[in-house]
Length: 347
Ligand code: N2P
Image 1 (cartoon, helix red, strand yellow):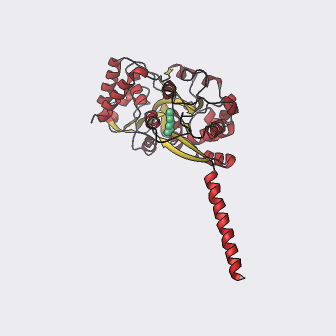
Image 2 (tube, rainbow, N blue to C red):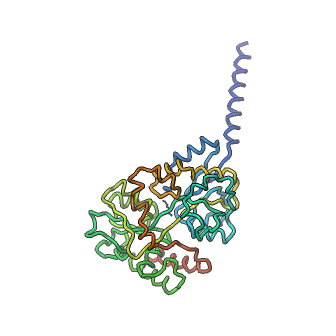
Image 3 (cartoon, rainbow, N blue to C red):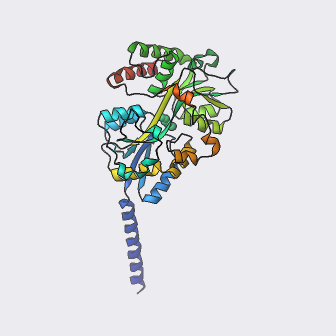
């Protein structure tokens, strides 16, 4: 009798473990590919709990890395987060699915200034995620006077204390703007001049960095850096000696959005996720955590007062006036790529 009981017990245990395993297998998966340091992981947990969808999360460092990964194939993502000029390129190359707005009721929550922009004029392919500017962050205790110009990044006084972004469009934009050109220049001579500026600057530069830029400035290892506004917010939170400035020559205004690649395996879950990320309470929690600016006005209203009034996150109309949005260089992408390779391979 004892034997029968233990066999029965074993069977029960076996059945439970089989059904648990099956449960795990059955849970639909969503493959999300986003920039590093660009989401509150709690929000992902909340999505998994609410929808019973397992998020497989992976990160990239630049738009160009994202593009290469997507083009290479071999990996299939359901939701990715390119910036506007890369969305323009991906649409042109037929790499994106149209998004079914009927499945994104929270699309109505997006502020109207973020709709109908040139990169997706009819909002067919993308739902805005975050936006911001590019500027200079500097340690007030390590520089002699407040900085206000891209040319300050070429000041020999700060040799070895300057960090630049390891990102081709952003860094070329700095040099183009310093020279008084458009950051969408399609003129090879201007681009060559920008290259020469960046090569000339190299002996002063501590490093070209990605997300590590934050630690370099917070710790005081570097005194000056080029950053995206939301990272500046996160950095100033950690080290109040830091200040962010939009240089007087003007800068880049950027928009990152959520899109669904053509080879997505789970479009239904992708739309659920995009809708969830746009829900005001979630967008607010996420923006507050990462430091970036949300395109969802109701979310912004949920943020602490000092964040809502922070000019780093929400620049003045005058500052916005003096900005340009990146466009896809289309037929001259190879020129941009070549110039960037020449800059980064120069010792
Ligand atoms: C955050 C990346 C922000 C992307 N680490 C800015 N376009």
